Length: 89
Image (cartoon, rainbow, N blue to C red; front, side, top):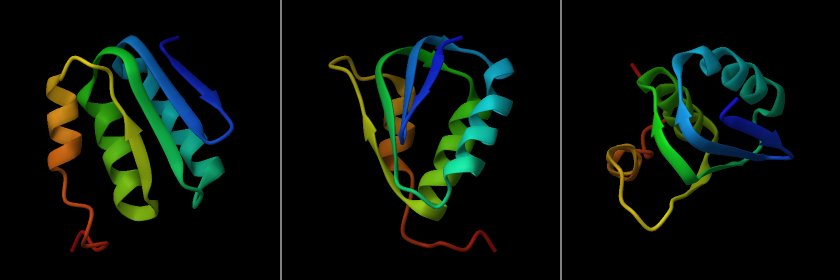
């Protein structure tokens, strides 16, 4: 598994595939509304379904990202995501 859950930190490593999205969602439902740190420092790539869960959580409850030295496409998506408006309507 490329996703580790510890306290309020989620660490992604290697390639994160779509089969990990359910465990990610379940963990976030357990810790909500806590602020979570999403650690991408060792992540090579992440499936869009998992990234959508991360972005939805950040939008609703807040949190922070940690990225490695090399800028990845998912990092640009996360940094460009609008956190301000809490409503999706």
